Length: 252
Image (cartoon, rainbow, N blue to C red):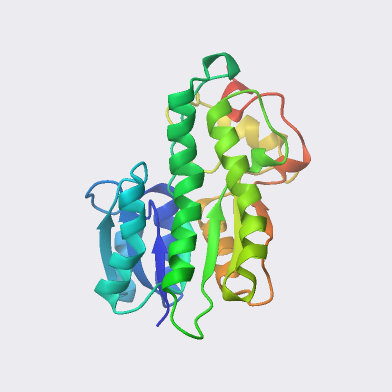
C-alpha cells in the first residue's frame, strides 16, 4: 500500500485530495498546523475505505518543525512516503504598497521554502529503489499574475518555478509536478450570485470542483513518465487573463 503525506490534508481541497487518495488505496499521513478533526468528506472516505491514517502537527512557519516532519512520518509508518502533496498554504490580502519584509518572508517560508525543504527531506529519506512523487499545489494565477494579494502571488510563483527546478535537480530520484487550481471553494468574501457569474466567464463555463483537483493530483502521483509539469485545473481561467483576483470581479 503506497503512503502519501498531504500537508494541510484535513480541510477543504486538502481533504478532497486525501479522500481521493484513500479511495485509490493509499495510506495517509495528514498534516495540520494544529490538531483538528477532518472535514466530513474525508471522514466518510476513511470510514468507507478503512485506509490507514495518522495525523501529524507541524508549523510550516518553523523550519525546525518542517525538518522533523518527514522523519516523523517515516518513523511512525516504518517507511518514507511514496507521495508528498504540498497543499498547505498561507494567504493574505494586500497589493504592492502593503508589502513588508517580515510579512513577505513569512509568506515565502510557508508557501515556498517549506515545500522545497519537505521535498528535499522526502528524497533524502527515500529507501533504495524508491522514487517518490511530489505534487505542489500552486495557483492558476502563476500564468497571468494579478495585482492583488501580491505576497501570496509571489510565493506561489516561486513554488511553480521550484517545481521544474527540483524536477531537474532530483533527476530519476523523484518526480516533481504541480497542480494549479482556479477558484474552487468560495469563502464568505464572495457575494450571492458572484460564483455563477465568475463561472460563466471561464472558457469552459464552469469552475473546478475539489474532486477535479484531487483527480489531477492522483494522475500525477501515478504518471511514471511525467515530471516538471503543471496541470491547470481552473475551467480554463489561465487562458483568459483576469484584470483582478476573482474576489474583485463580477460583484453585485
